[in-house]
Length: 451
Ligand SMILES: [Ca+2]
Ligand SMILES: [Ca+2]
Image (cartoon, rainbow, N blue to C red; front, side, top):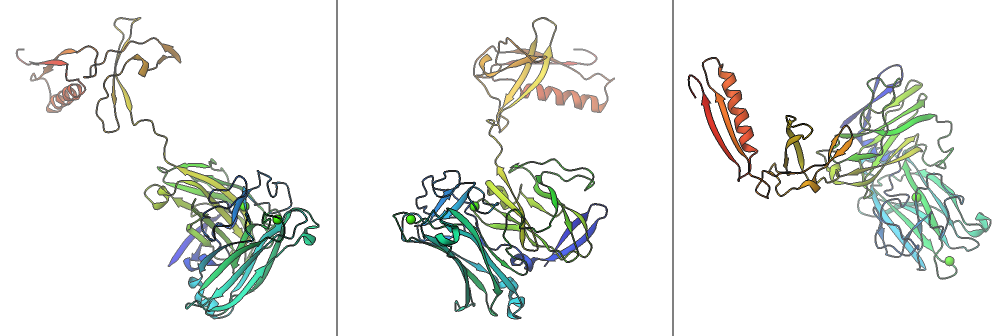
């Protein structure tokens, strides 16, 4: 299946296409790689579940903000977000995930699909508590075909200071590989707390994966104006769209927009991660660029919301853009249900000024199913004139109280009326009667050659 991707150079519209099977190449295929999904522990104790991972119940998710293990300003990835993995209170903490790479089977079996495994690994102070990230390549029957790992980073490599250090290794995915099992293992060597730390883990199949992440990780990549937006500008590159980070389940789509300078051969890729860690469409790599230019990305980077399964995935989302397998930037945004207003609708039907300065406003209030709301009093209303709140008294016409209303309708059915005139009169009369309460009374008179 072809997924066509429209990339607009600033001055010229050009079409590229990408294969859906490119989903596992040139992007980080580890789910929840930076511990940003799920609930962190305020005191770095074990958490029972970590989205995207199978856990042994010992691993913790710490926050940088707590400073309990490492702070936001200690050495580490610049895309560190809020959370990181830590070992909790057990001797060994281990989490894993098994990732299908079957969609890249042709390239894998040809023996020419490279991989890059990387992560920011470290520990606390002068202790050797440490983290190791390992990938095991398995065939369809589960037999191991090869492994690779990064870490541990011991105290000496950190100069005895609390830090995360970027570690990376590369190789070729063994032929016949169908699943990649990724394991993060954190081991205690001293004290009661397991201070091995890890964040921003990555497994990229294809070229260019994992060159350090964070600032400078994109090499000389120049990009700007990255944002989430509800609508794209009519003319890309001359007028920027309006950024937003908050979407509602009733919004049609969310767009990722940015400008980026690309040279011939560059491969751009994006991914969208739901609050539960699931990576959802549209994810994948674009075809390599053939013309160097500044490109305006957006028209196909749209996440459907209303009417799609994503409308049920409320919470904080993440989208990332990669250039040649290296992270360019991360954006987060929320999808939430619209705030409840109680479903009430107030409609002003008539304003009577004949007794000015006393003004009578005839209004109807209905609930979400369109039924009249009764029993209302002046405390339920605020009436403003030119921005100034006015004193109000409320006489309800409904069954909930107030004064019943008596009305007389005179309907003109004389020969001077057209058929449409009479139909309009009937429609208006029915609309009025429909707004009356059960205590109200109405009389109807006809007006033609006589009354
Ligand atoms: Ca993180
Ligand atoms: Ca320790």
